[in-house]
Length: 218
Image 1 (cartoon, rainbow, N blue to C red):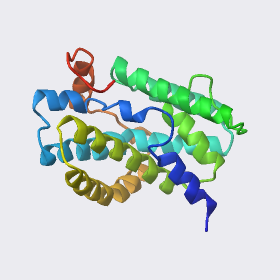
Image 2: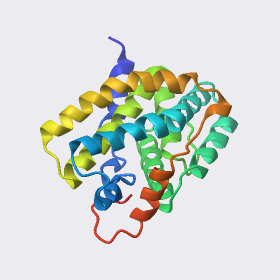
Image 3: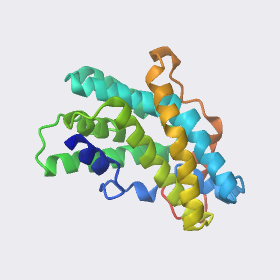
Image 4: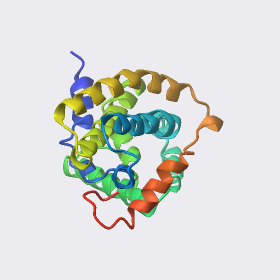
């Protein structure tokens, strides 16, 4: 058995102590606004983000960070980290990736792992550093990243819509079916094809910052 598999499961686990459960990335505002109101609309919202936002930007950026970490290209890691941070559309999204990156960097230090991570990394930068250290293949790393994100979004929907556990499992079945194609698309994109253009997502995230009643931090 390849030991990288168990490390990959560890990286994708909700038990990873980075606080991912406390963020909804604009989903909570979409629920407040009535855009997301049931299983079908929740699935559409999450699937659209998976394919258009993560597939066109976050996943290909993660692949580039992973490749840079694997060859020890610290300068490239720093550039990609800064580019990713600049792409965060709201104050909450910026705070989210820095907080999660800080928590993961602290875990790396506490575990005494010999991994070079910037002092204030974004979350994908720190996550890719661990994936590179454990020699996880790019397609598998991207699939795990996307699955972890999708699972967190579904759990947020279950709490905030609210939805039942069966609805959550149906949504995860469909999202999981789409992930391989999203991974393939992300790995095939050239540098000039990356895009995080998702105005509806950006507006939802910005409006969440002034939402009166909320469960999540983004």
